[in-house]
Image (cartoon, rainbow, N blue to C red; front, side):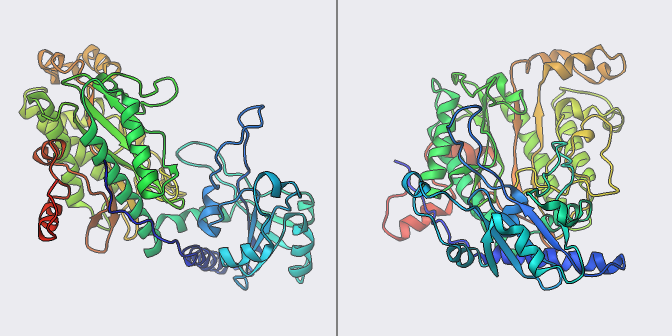
Length: 500
């Protein structure tokens, strides 16, 4: 039976108080720089509970991310406001009907939310117009800074707060979103602690999957092991994204695991597995990928591809520090993989020529990594003035920013044999010359390898928050029953406990 050393931490609401303070400081600085008076309120609307289509089945609620960042509120139906001049914070809670107490549990008084979420004032949502007018009308119509802006990842727009009577206020739709997004890019120590815990949970759960994976199982059984371990031992009810449990040829499908490809293949002896899964704790997430052979032993082809990706993964991490451009790290990963493939005679020719023709994107069509925090693809990758590249592979980058101290970003190089990309390369008379098609044919049903870790950018370099076996000898040892981390065996021996 799986054991765990995890201890779910208490979450201090000072984390969200600090996030609000950072926003107020940034808003005041912006208003000062634009010669605008330091007045108005940042007003956000929290998420609403959703039913499954037309039924009365309520989906498990997860708070809207910007609202969670500022207020930490778990419940649906809230609004939150922060006065720029005073820094005063206000929550507006939904007024629940009496029968809520019968079906859903105790109706909490407003004082409960004031104490729990460490805000200055709490009122009901239906009082929002009166409260804001009574308290903030000394300069005329109160000014509301509303959250409205486009996600560079989804192309969707955040929903600005809306309520009956909002026409009685002056509103600003352009100021808040870029400033609040930039606040989310740099993590505080308390935020980092939660991301580290989510990584600890996910790393441990990945290792449990690794230990139990065997030929004959189903992909969804590996998913269930991860979900069970993360929830039972780590108290993680939510997950950062849909689990990708891809084996064999499925491991070349970058976002496998969705409803049309639902982690349902049978694991075969000799398959490579690509497990991309991450748990979320108190809104903050993790994003980890482990790749390994289902039977616990790497064959020669698996060793070649895996070591190519591992070398790229490690090269990027060794170069990361503030000031480094992320697009350069992506190109470093591509070049490293191409060099490894050339050494094994899978491709041939001049690496610089391959890079110029963007052939690295044939093997790694996705971006190297993305910002991570309350969202798996945390916002801020493309602030105003930064344009997404158009070239193959580079167009998939979720950011091309320079690294800054305090960022958390994933490093996830991969190498895949995707027929939909190899066919056009073969048909191109110039690109085709770089490929040894006889060797490529040997990898036709290989799938792919991805290795993904979560990195925190420090003042001098970076810190890896993920703790999974990465070297081939480590993976094979863990799958054969060895403890992880390796020093765990020595610690148990010192305490008179069995090693495994």
